[in-house]
Image (tube, rainbow, N blue to C red):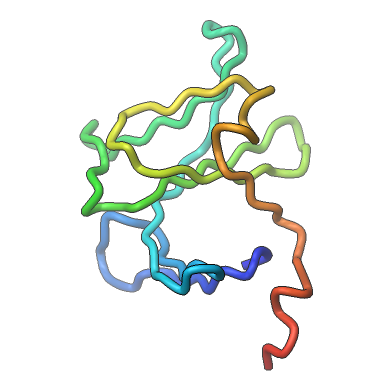
Length: 117
């Protein structure tokens, strides 16, 4: 919402967590939210495990995008999203996260909300 997206939560049992309207294209997209974890055994790379509780992956009918939320040691959380490519895991080096994934600021962009009653 801080970036101008219109966000809605589902009230029915859906595979996705939220549906949001892209502020630039005006299209509704579905998102599955996951936690980003750091893997010490992978040189500190960041990983998003994008599987259901039963171990199956999300296909494109389940979610258009995956959102990863990374919060470490009381720091301000960082939020990234990327296209659902129907993988069980998405990896990225911390130094390249903002290049490979779209980072969303969680600071309110007041300009995106001007004129909203």
